[in-house]
Length: 232
Image 1 (cartoon, one colour):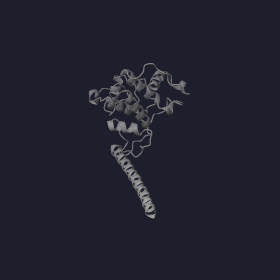
Image 2 (tube, rainbow, N blue to C red):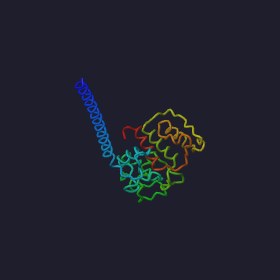
Image 3 (cartoon, one colour):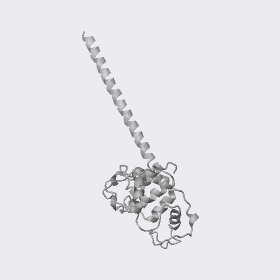
Image 4 (cartoon, helix red, strand yellow):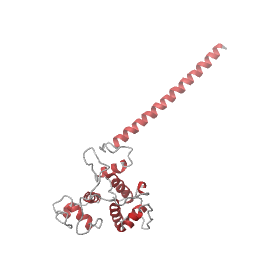
C-alpha cells in the first residue's frame, strides 16, 4: 500500500509540475510574441521623428499619414508643432502638394497686390485661386500671412470636395450653439464638412468659426478628407 501511495503522489506531483512548466512555457511564448509585435510596431513607425507627437495623441495617426505622404513636414527636424497656426499661404502650398501641382507652371503669375511675384508662395496662391479652391479677402488682396480660420478651412475643403464630386450632396445641418456666428458665405460649406465627417466631435458643441486652426486640426481634417477621397 505504501508503495502504491508513494507512486500515486509521485505521479500526481509530476503531472502538477508538468502542468506548471506547460503554463510557464505558454506565458513565455505569449510574452515573446507580444514583444515581437511591439518591436514590429516600433520599426513600422520609426520614421515619425517628432518629439511633440505622442503615440497616444489623437492626432498621431493623421500626422503619421501626412508625413509619410510627404505632404506635411515638421517646423524643425524633431518638432511638428501641433499647436501652431498655419497661414493661408502655407495652406495653399499644402493643398498644392496633395494634388501634385507643379509650381513651375504658374511661375511669375500674380493675381493679388499683396503677393509678390518672387515670393515662395506666389505660384501656389495662383494655382489654388485659378482652381477655384481659395479666394482672396476682397480688395485685390489674398492675405497670405494671415492665419487660417476654421470656417475658411472648411470652405476650402468643401470647394475641393464638391469639385471632385465627393461625399453626400444632401446636407445635414450642424447645430452648434454658435451656429449664428458662422459667416453667411461659409454656412453651406460647414454643413458639407459636417455631413461628410470632416468636423471632429470636439467642435460639435462650440464650432468657433473665426478661431485660428492649429496644425494638428489641419492634419486631422486632411486625413479625414483623404478617407473620403480614396483616389488621392
